Image 1 (cartoon, rainbow, N blue to C red):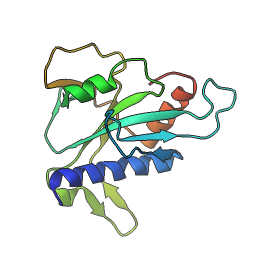
Image 2: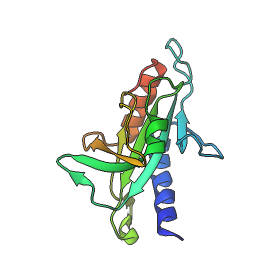
Image 3: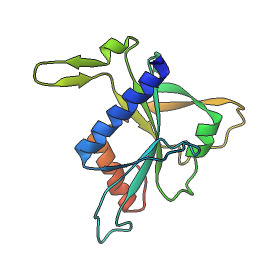
Image 4: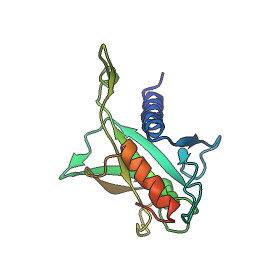
Length: 166
């Protein structure tokens, strides 16, 4: 398999595992023309602004060393940047960047009682990001404190049910 396709598949499996652990339902689209790879929703939340909240993600995966000064300096295409920024979406949108080891044989470590997925995934909201004059790409900075976990996904769904974003 092409190495980039391997990263895409591993990235999907990684975030699907987090969502399953958080108890979220996966929503996918057959066509990615809006820079959204996957969405998640949850049933319930009666008495809140949105009864069945939904969040969406653009997934990226890289083995490049992009960490500098407590942030990931990720080069994002202009199209993805424009599709993810703004506050006029029905559902909150996030960028999720999974950092993996260079060698794909190090992505998963199989132990007798469990497996470990390497490394971590981080998230960024571009809701309040300014327009850019860059033609092809823009470097976005994702704080290492914004690690995507099953608890983070749950918090994002909770916020979406209140009509807010993280």
